Amino acid sequence: MDPEKKQILLISPRGFCAGVTRAVDVVLETLKQHGSPVYVKHEIVHNKHVIRDLEQQGTIFIEDVESVPSDRPLIISAHGVSKKVINASKKNNPITIDATCPLVTKVHVQAQKFFNDGLKIILIGHKNHPEVEGTMGQLPEGSISLIEKISDIEKLDFNVEDEIAYITQTTLSVDDTNSIILELKKRYPNIKSSPKEDICYATTNRQNAIKAHASKCDSFIVIGSKNSSNSNRLVEVAANSGCKDSSLLEDASKLNLEEYNNSEIIGISSGASVPDILVKEVVDKFEEHFNVDIEHVTYGEENVSFKLPKELRK
Image (tube, rainbow, N blue to C red; front, side):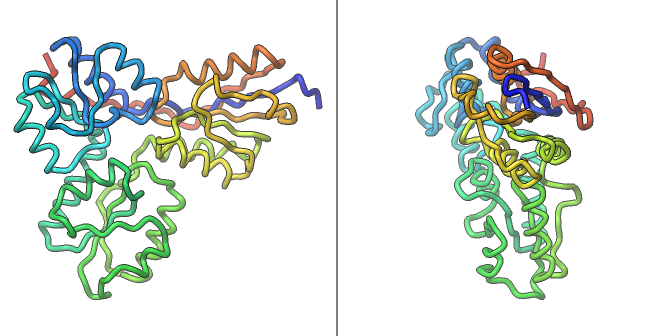
């Protein structure tokens, strides 16, 4: 093996999903129509570079919606928020714009429907994740039981004959979630689910693309921020699909090329909130130091897009 020669498998689909594109466009369009500053509840998406860029353009990210001046626009992040937060936002800020991903909103709507039908609801998701907090906050406290792993099922205080339904966070590991669902169905054979999959198309596509190619790689890099759920799941998928040397990389500045001296084939993908310029910078750094052959590997096409909220449409 020539240590100077590397093959990079550049996996697609990767990077921005439709929900992230819409959320970022909401902030940019609000800045355009209303000027700065524009306030956003929580990070609009979980990527430090996107956040820094928007801050430089006049965006202020906050957690307490009541701290926002009443004459300035307030945007709700792509992860969604509880009804309590959205109501407080609208009460304090006449210009409140909801950038919640439509696929997260779909889960909110389904949770409300299950609740209205009198079902007990289980949410599969990660505790303290903003999306999970927003989904649980759609209903009265105690209406949704959160589970993170199979062993949590034992803690559920439901009877077999109870009418039960489950919903999920949109950015989970597909395989891990299916394992939990399988166990739920064993324990509660009549459990109901959403008519359509809750895990979003982008999460599924990116995981499937990595699954198909990770075993060919000596190392696998997922570009994304540490607080990005979907990026962390991609690292796990790569490791579980045959590439044990799989890691999360924030950007090219954190890349230690010496770690890849013994890797001939390197897979690269990125989370759903990562601009493709960050991928290019990582590839460029490899090309500066090694003789690199790049192979573009595409696992299905994506053509999903979402309209801007009605408040911003002209």
